[in-house]
Length: 298
Image (cartoon, rainbow, N blue to C red; front, side, top):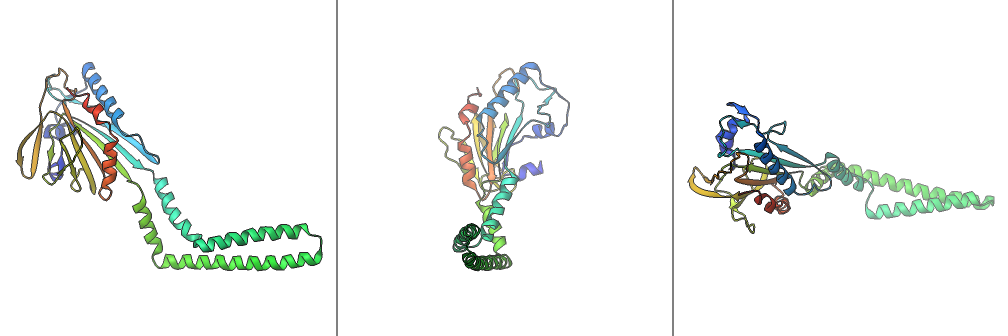
């Protein structure tokens, strides 16, 4: 529970923490409970953003087996607390390729050097064809001399490019290039979480986030569930604001007797990403079909 209170967006109730840790007797879902759960899973999957190029998507529902185990004593009119997580991860191959490109471009030399080398290579090819074509011995010797001069100039220029590259590496240019390439990458990981049938306790440092049609939304640049991330939380459903306690304001979810505990009464959608790229989190939230999720609520 200490870890939970340390988070600026503590979303899990003690009862759910006990359930997740395996404390207390639990049971598998009945047919109607499983049907409601699977409908909610489908809605969550259908509302997610499309997987961007160079990313991989992983989704987790409940435990490792994809199950939600319910307390044995849970009643049909009570709420089963559930959590879904979708993680979008930028491929390591793409990251490595972008970093290699920062070195490859520098190793080719300056644009002027590259242009001169291209001209010398073209001249080399032209002279080689002319040498092979002519039957005049004197002309062949003249072309050979010119070809030698062209190749010598090309070799000297390539040596200069290599010397410049080595000096660049020694002066810290390689380190700076890696850092620049890393900063230029898109968000390495973005997560979308759905906390279903649970109260929400935003930290008072969380700022209101304007989202048309969804008045209860909060943005924070620190203290999210994942370390070194920023996050936006959107509340869907009938939440009541309660008295602030110890820097947090509780949003209590009102229950409705739906006859099945796995039917959603409300949920918190939390989108998180790198702390230094808050706009990527805002943009990703904009790609979530919140209306589709809202439609499954009573």
